Image 1 (spheres, rainbow, N blue to C red):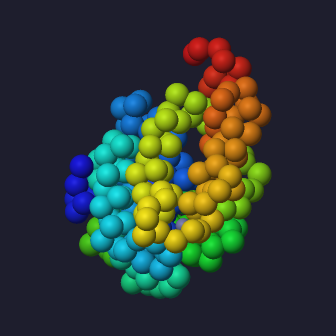
Image 2: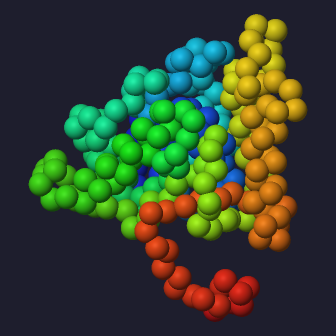
Length: 244
Ligand SMILES: [Zn+2]
């Protein structure tokens, strides 16, 4: 696992803050890894405005969580927390990484959320995904637009277009989330926040949501996703549990 390389991967998940992907799609990332696919995460910001933790501590936690999820690499772009914007410069950075790493699928936050950075992240990734396929943007790098762009849910869950069974990977997801100790743990120095406190803490809310989503497809835990475009079904028998 490296923090600098952007080698070829299958799945690229992007979050506004260092724990977003773990919360929204940690189970799916662990599942992809176990299925033998190469995965990576980009954290757009270091989450420096969080009540607890510092960018240095959060960076260390993010790398530990990367090991838990089995990522090939994880990179922080150090864009400003609460200052994400769809500027040409930022889009170009993402276009370059997308073209260099050539993922088949990009994951990013859902486009509606209480946190403005999550909304901005969705917009930024959508624009970068689009521009990555344009020949005349950064013409020195071969254009490449990944076939799939899926949105995961954070503090606001929309209607999922599909739900992935992540029951067998839920312990890994839980461990990856709790590795962000400065956010989800209770230490002597930490202040109480909605992330770390009480039965309504973020982990409890995430687990409840994932249990509900899992139960709606007949499994213990599920993660929901949506897309702006229709999903192609290659093997309709697979939806009925019939092998090809
Ligand atoms: Zn976030």
